[in-house]
Image 1: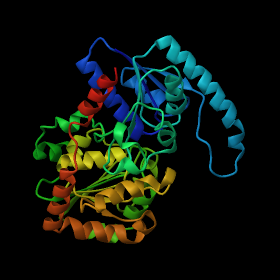
Image 2: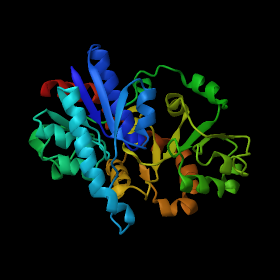
Image 3: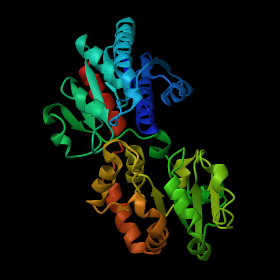
Image 4: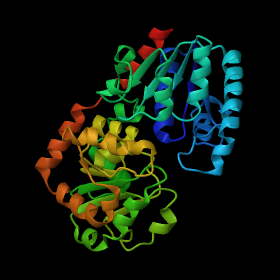
Length: 362
């Protein structure tokens, strides 16, 4: 089997793509897989680290506001279509998969013109513009959320869920092991706050400014992942210096972090939400306001509607987040209800189901 996977830009696009590729290689070891991404974007580093070859297109998004960046957009698009055609014709894939992001547009557009079967995987509850544009042409669509018929043709749509990292699905580590890993007191409840690998400023500011409240919570462990961008800025704050607060630039063992946590506070990216559901984690979601179509709020609302999470607007985080998370983590009954509702939404076989849809196309 020969497969092209295209897209990227954020971890929410890249890590599901890698999960799909890994599952294909596990099931069909002789398969050939090529990634196509956008030059200068995160995928150009992450994909080779995962052991796959990637080609880059000179492509970026069209800005909705008046900016000189849009002057180059038509040139970038034409150049990317030409290079995508060259890549696809040379590689001769059996199927092309788009995971969202700038590069998937030209790649899947060309594949459709060449009558190569195509599939898109939409991670969010509100699709990005690239997937909305491609939806009418592709052969099949795999969605992470129910109710996507308002965006896509239901006849070629399958609700699969999002591909999840294997370490979470196969996690057999004990809770005691998770406490040992992070150096936590096993007799305390644990609050996990994180904003993705780069961090989230508003979450960090809310923690920094809540010193008096956090300082009083001697019965808590706090894992505060500030992100690589913000580690130097926040590690010396008064909150970070508290004995029961563990400040980290990055968490490389999220399986153990989830295992330790009684409550998570995080952004509402599609992949994060899928992970929270898989492990049945009670969570407060603070959607990022800096994403296209405000899709994180829509992701979070899909869980709130099922009583599977609590949501706080980013603009309210500084004032109300600390009080809300301390109140919730001390309410055992509500923690259990939210975690149970989240678990009911999990799709643990998502990666396998997506791979099966890819095989069906071939």
